[in-house]
Image (cartoon, rainbow, N blue to C red; front, side, top):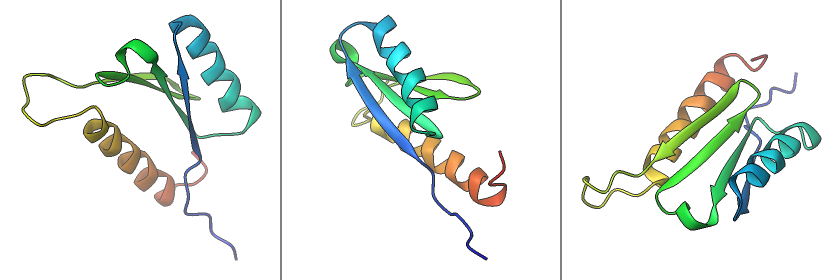
Length: 91
């Protein structure tokens, strides 16, 4: 009765957004990841794209929020997705 309570994810860093998204899609399929965090080198501190089998989610750091970094909304998204996966691992 081995229940899986983990979420597989990987990350990609690239200078060309098109190559980045192609590599993220490839990693998603090849390594059977649940999500890939895709970082473009020039905007990596302000924006990332989370690639899933259901699509792409852009996460931005808003410079108007003092002390906020792109990792905060990224972590929230990953926690939400992991919680949903724990409840329904077939998704």
